[in-house]
Length: 266
Ligand code: ADP
Ligand code: MG
Image (cartoon, rainbow, N blue to C red; front, side, top):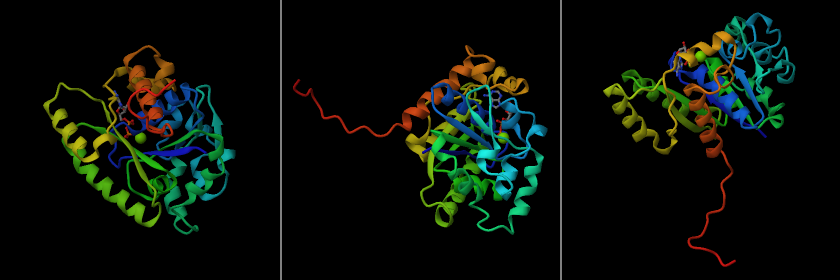
């Protein structure tokens, strides 16, 4: 059964889509079966995987309003990862879902059908806390939060935390925090250290050790429709996202029984 991870932060431009695309691809490169759902009407995850937005006949929109099943909407890519794509049609879904039954649980229900086929399902959320994101946060087991180290990051985070509390109370009691990832990271700025310290104080060991540096290649890759590990396999961007994938998979290993101290007799 796949673990479902929503990549969310209501602030735009913090690296959600970049992280969703590249982390999913690198986790797939480690041999895991991975699906990514594009829950943003901008469709940047879709094009980031080389799928033209207008070619999405059945995508997240159709799945949410019940016009297609998740299985029907899944597209196989040449990058090992499967994708449920989106385009601007998805922008209308929030409004259309208002009158549908269990409007916040529709993605969860749809994904349950294909959950057995994957190890991990990632959901790239839009930069808002609307009904689309609500569907993402209700469908997932955990939230991965990309954070860009700037002053306003902290303000946004407290809002996100209170949203997660509400979601736990109303829709998804088991919602966990997968982790916090620093994106576009650079230690050249004094502010970075302060933000890192404050985020660590709050999130403790949920903060990933791997950080993603600013890289031109990372920002170029989507225009070639390729995840970074295909666009520039040997570059520092690819290396960073592979490290993140390794840390992610490690953190998701089933817990081994605690080893006892000392050597056991042969
Ligand atoms: P979000 O999905 O949170 O809105 P994006 O992933 O679309 O954010 O990133 C916002 C912008 O920042 C994009 O233009 C993207 O190419 C760029 N970007 C993201 N991560 C990096 C990085 N590590 N290095 C350079 N540019 C980045
Ligand atoms: Mg995005």
